[in-house]
Length: 366
Ligand SMILES: Nc1ncnc2c1ncn2[C@@H]1O[C@H](COP(=O)(O)OP(=O)(O)O)[C@@H](O)[C@H]1O
Ligand SMILES: [Mg+2]
Image 1 (cartoon, helix red, strand yellow):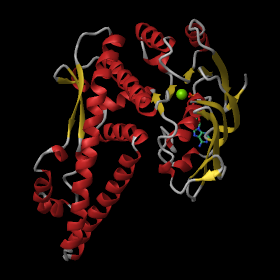
Image 2 (cartoon, helix red, strand yellow; image 1 turned 90 degrees about the vertical axis):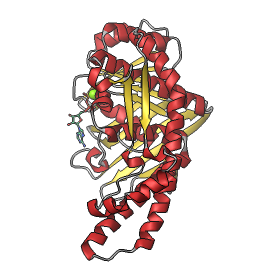
Image 3 (cartoon, helix red, strand yellow; image 1 turned 90 degrees about the horizontal axis):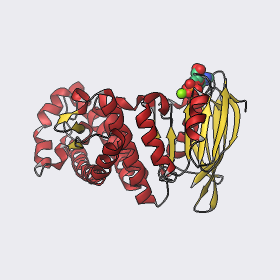
Image 4 (tube, helix red, strand yellow; image 1 turned 30 degrees about the horizontal axis):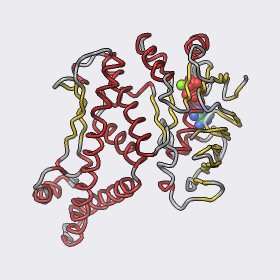
């Protein structure tokens, strides 16, 4: 599978940008702020129906305009596939597959598998548990539609349940039957989602370790330990035992929205003891494992977006990463770099076809 061409219309700082890509390597070069990452983000939209950076769709419309449109022509299983994503301020976002609008954007997720390695990825390590849940949820959702549907339902019930708890506190009246029906859904969805999360981590573990050892040339063991109450055999009882607390705090205190993923080096959190280099190697290994899991599940190589990766890594890690790429382990790749001489030097050494695009103020100038 690969992206043959892309058109961005009034998307971020791109008024009208048209690009034809190589099925192998594509490198966007240009000054900081010129619009390189925005091109990658357009590709991200076509795969995941949302931005990797800006969660509000309206902020992705070119300032002063009313809508944006992104169009991509893919080749998928030797067939042409046109994906269009349009968003008009105040309206619903629309996704079209070969001209046909989908009822729900979530129906599209998973069709075009994509892995992004970006500069702020180490937030996965440094920030709170929400970012980690989002990452793993996004990963599983791309492979498993049922997981995504269950997750959407779970968040719907969580919102409803919390609103009900607030209503109890405000009115002093308690509709325990309604609460009970929410509890029932929350418990069974939590158990099912937690099992999927746990199964994914089992699958990822050996790949994570092998990439980490190769990239960092390090011998230390790395792992991800999933912590979830929903894996407890007495989870339903535990959930219900928190009812009084839930009513007092007007919040749901158990369920998979409380889970965390502990990223460990040896027995210790990498956040606390990992050097910068170890943290970067961990994240890249995790993303490469994500790539492999997608390829295994989908039978297609995902599109790989590498945003400013040369800035992030030292020479040794760049060399290792490029060695992996040149072994043709990967499919179509999009890179960005603010320093064209550097990327030209690194990329033209590989025996892959590579196209360079020079971006300036939201336009492709060569
Ligand atoms: N909705 C928008 N309308 C106009 N410009 C935008 C919008 N969103 C972001 N930008 C601009 O895009 C530029 C950043 O582009 P980006 O692709 O991140 O640059 P880089 O080439 O450094 O990766 C910034 O100048 C920013 O102001
Ligand atoms: Mg950028």
